Length: 119
Image (cartoon, rainbow, N blue to C red; front, side, top):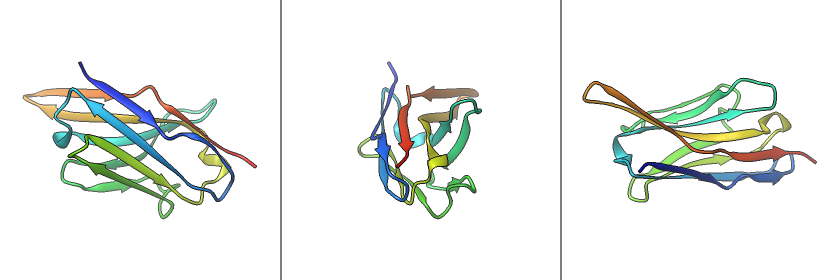
């Protein structure tokens, strides 16, 4: 059974930092592309950052220079270090695992963790 569990969200003041974690089990973590998405109230879910199985990284323009995505394959864990947070970063952050194997797509989501940036 696949489980994807995010943690590390919370309330932080503008300019502050948070580190999100995503623990995945039931998959061969190292072969998956991992990603963070977020969804603010009344808005569509948007891609924040991705890291492939080969450690190729991509960021949304809105978080470049402030957020850092990383993975620890030995711990089956994905991270998102968020610095210089802004009120517009307020959203539910979701972890996604996806890969294509033997002609089939495998795509899993966590339940989300709330990040609120406010003074």
